[in-house]
Length: 262
View 1 (spheres, rainbow, N blue to C red):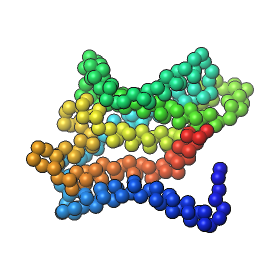
View 2: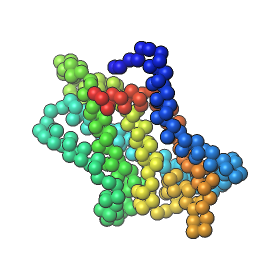
View 3: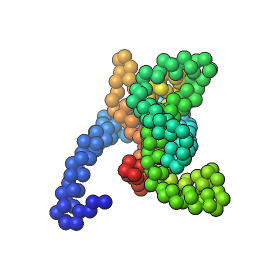
View 4: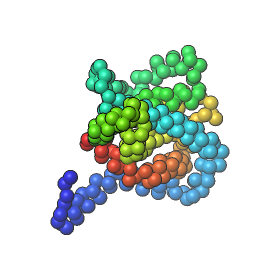
């Protein structure tokens, strides 16, 4: 690991990091400032008075929780398999999964629509949870596999000597070590599933099943475009993600660095 020993070097690095964050901070400041434009906090009250905020937040929470659960389970088991187990065609299957990273979401809409219609899953939460899970798993499997590559194989060998099978080794030895990468997977999955727009828009038609990303539609129309309330809705929508990141920040950063480098 590189270490800057001089005070001048640390100051220059700090200035560089501040400059790099400016393009990301300015839009956030503008969003918050714009949400308070005009009537101030009355804009937030107007968003709440639509009466759909609790329902939309509940629906987004259900979808995000379902996606997080499935992505976590499959990423941990698949990452363990690709990292620590030997089977025919392991690398081929792994790279085929990574190919899915190149698929744009929009080209899957038509086959997904037909499939969900035939399975009578259209206008259900599963129509959003399952595609979201499939779209996020290639990247999370890549992170998990790289992280588990850093777990010494000697631990697995010691477990086998003590009589543990593969499942017991995974559950008792490997899984307790995956807290950093698990935090990274959870935060990334929450951000992507909570901010999903296209899939809920197309596959959830009932008003009582729509999500927070569709909240600004109450202030947009043919003759209206109230930007202050749209920005207020955006700020309210972002709060759960910010809270989740702050709660898992330390482990998230450790997991991302380990999963990206090992």
